View 1 (cartoon, rainbow, N blue to C red):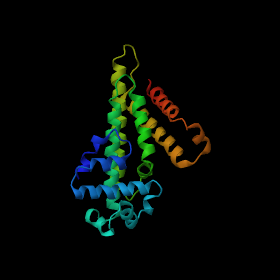
View 2 (view 1 turned 90 degrees about the vertical axis):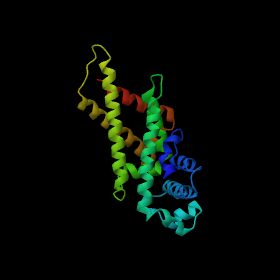
View 3 (view 1 turned 30 degrees about the horizontal axis):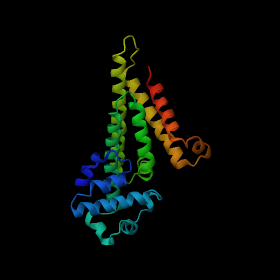
View 4 (view 1 turned 135 degrees about the vertical axis):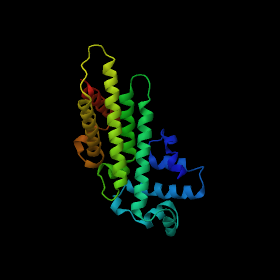
Amino acid sequence: MRAVAHLADEATEHRFERALTRASAAARKSERTQARLQAAACRLLETGAPSELRIADICAEAGLAHGTFYVYFRDIRHLMAETLTAFVGFLKAGMRKAARERGGHRIRSTTAAYVALFEQNAGLMRCLVSRVDAFPEASAAFERLNREWAETVADARLRRLAREPGAPVPGRDEVLRRAYALGGMVDQYLIMLLFGGDPVLTAVSRDRDAVIDTLSQIWERGMDP
């Protein structure tokens, strides 16, 4: 699908549903219709679990006839697998764009991008972080993203340490373990904040800039030798 293939062009937009719609705007009618169905599912996931999705509701949300769904997808599982896999690619594009930030603030810029992507696509992220068994393709894609990101962070830190005279340089396995652990901590924080309903955590996390500062400091200090 052309629209999905060009989602990386919309990396400045943090909300996947809007990026999907925008990417399909100049595509063929069939691709626009498919994107409408996927965008409708994204909106419904903001207020309901994947198990609650119904084809009739998706079509109604998209403003399409019920039978239109089967022109593009076999069933809900097919739609969700395609949508979540495309969303993982969108996450990767957004993180890579943020990582190219100049001026020595890459950790903060990537952290800010991830928080925004997580928060503005909470329904889709809930599917990924909860590892829904019905969508193994999406789970595998998310695991690859986490692995690639941990390796990118670890290798970047090792290169930086190698340029600092006298700096202790830990082994790659140690740095990679830290990257995985820190990424998991950030995910767990956002899961608790957005899905947990803890009033204390909610109260101390209202200032998103402060949250990003905290998470960025955790990354910085956790990756130090």
